[in-house]
Image 1 (cartoon, rainbow, N blue to C red):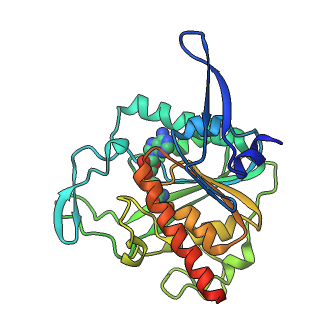
Image 2: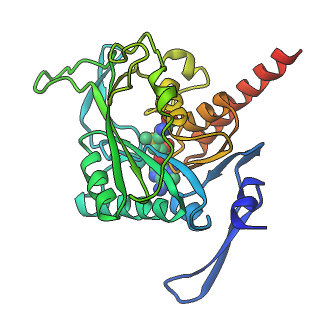
Image 3: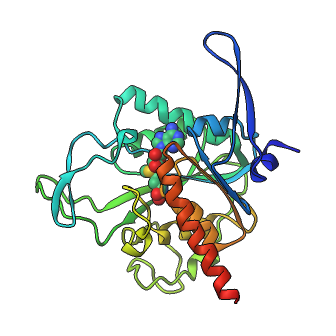
Length: 296
Ligand SMILES: C[S@@+](CC[C@H](N)C(=O)[O-])C[C@H]1O[C@@H](n2cnc3c(N)ncnc32)[C@H](O)[C@@H]1O
């Protein structure tokens, strides 16, 4: 059985590594959760990706740490609060942050199929580093999407424009290969809430989508949870049935939950924080339960 089948079947994946001590170290990584092509790993994304065979993943959506949790302030429910999301989001300084992004973006390139694509989300804190690295690592950038958030929080400090968008970089592994873009589906994606989408006209590169609604946070919230409407659009635009989709920074599992709602997609999600995987499992179980009830 090849490594990817082993992963998709929830087997433990092993690698033999040579540590600093030059002794060989063998460590198995077992899925934290596994059901019908939906896999979650509670580990560092590099450790898991290291064990995935080259040229095997169809699409990667990565919402990495933005490295913005450095004691700034933001507005939440009308109140001034610290912007801090968690230790995982603290900057370790420019050089170390770039090194971190280079390591995971490089590993993503190795495991993507030649025709595979990667999406990376970010703000000014991380997106220029990631864009530079995509080019350095010989990806070919297809689009930079502006995700405009009509309901973005106001800027309480009133010292800059109110931040109301994020950028999504979409790139393919190999400039010469034919990537998947479901053009017609996007042309007819008539989302009435997106004022930038003209009915049955080409989809443009500015998308208006609100931040995650309360209904997507019923099991608790991840501090940077993406809205399902955003991930559904991305997955339908850039994958077909039976695709293997990987999210190295699973968080509350929005990518996986969108895969499950769309159907016929395999999902591998990785996160270092167990509580976020538990949140993902709760969201997953709710959809499974609703699907069972609708059959009765
Ligand atoms: C920006 S959040 C992702 C949010 C997610 N897109 C969602 O919709 O909920 C980034 C996540 O990456 C995780 N993380 C940070 N460093 C990691 C690493 N080296 N390996 C795996 N996960 C990591 C954090 O715990 C956090 O949940």
